[in-house]
Amino acid sequence: MKPTICILLFLLIYNYSPAQQFIANYDEAKIPAYTLPDPLMLNDGSKVTSLKDWEKRRMEIYRLFGKEVFGAIPEWKGSVKSTVVSSKPNALQGLAKRKEVVLEFVHGNQKCALTILIYLPPNSKNAPVFLGYNFDGNQTTTTEPDVLIPDSWVNNNKELGISDHHANANGRGSAASRWPVKEIISRGFGVATVYYGDVDPDFDDGFKNGIHPLLDTKRDSTSWGSIAAWSWGLSRIMDYFEKDNELNSRKVIVIGHSRLGKTSLWAGASDKRFAMVVANNSGCGGAALSKRIYGETVGSMNKAFPHWFCDNFKKYSTKEELLPVDQHELLSLIAPRPVYVASAFEDKWADPKGEFLACVFASPVYELLGAKKFGATEMPPLNRPVIGTISYHIRPGKHDITLYDWNCYMDFASDYFKLKNR
Ligand code: GCU
Image 1 (cartoon, rainbow, N blue to C red):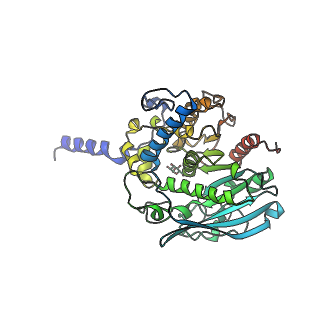
Image 2: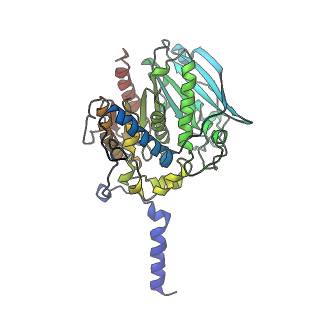
Image 3: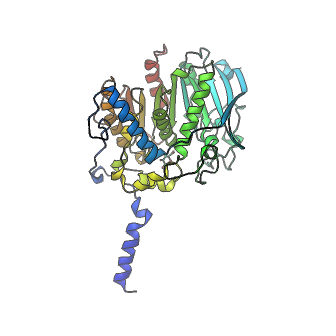
């Protein structure tokens, strides 16, 4: 082959190779000009000016996210059984009540079960409760030696010392820094966590395992992915909370880090029973604006995690400009309930500025519904939270959820729920 043809062929293949398409941009100057959809403009071009208009517009946006991003959730026709499998009145040296509750989902001859680990302060009936998934099993969130280990699939996680597809005792307490249970309880909150793999194992298996097969009849390009499944699980846990008179289901704060922050946002948008939503370092598909093309993009995410979203979302890989929604609208679906978005300075992959801007552009919806305007138009300095019905902070350090993050969430939630712990 002639050298010129070789060079041309190389350029052609290189330009269209996935690697070339998904090289992350970290340069603000290279962000393409983009136009965000207006959350206050109805499909027919008219402006939203009243609560009634907003309810209509909200459904338009919600349906678009369902159809084009997270996927639609089929109707649940099965049964759910809850069983308290352990109960310890004086856990954490007497600081908290602890219990573990199994929810078993049954449809036809199929089953799926999750285990909720719950810590509650003594005055639990009034205490707001943080509810969030963990990445590697409930036993990793606490150093207490008798917390149950999941039977379901657990990711290989060398960092946490979990080395097979089933969690083992090696990982016990290894994610405790992400779950400061003593601090949470001492400030008057409860905390409940569930291993996300109980609801859907986090790999692409064609939706054969986890909860999907219990609801799916036939799948198409709008069918739900894993994030929708995890958020569905959070709503079923809320169903259980409503029946458990030891805790207050009207004060549940749904919280998540990273992919689980994407999940908490979709859960909060889908289920108005969640009183407040926290999205920690949620990035692409979470709080970060997709159309900025900074750090992780819709294309790179769909390629690495094809099971997270519905197949329709793949249409927008490298074509983010065609997306009919963007993530400020995901935040707006939570209005007027509080939403707290947080970034980490070194977490460029999650696009901290994109997460911040989503707060700025969600503000008009919150304002329409009576909240004060989001308190910043420029990124705030590190460790200087912008507090309001939409709150935001950026802290130094890497992609993680730290005690600093939790303290900010608890400070805000204390004021919001008028706790006397500040
Ligand atoms: C990857 C992924 C992110 C995700 C993160 C996480 O980095 O690209 O989208 O948020 O994992 O969940 O830890």
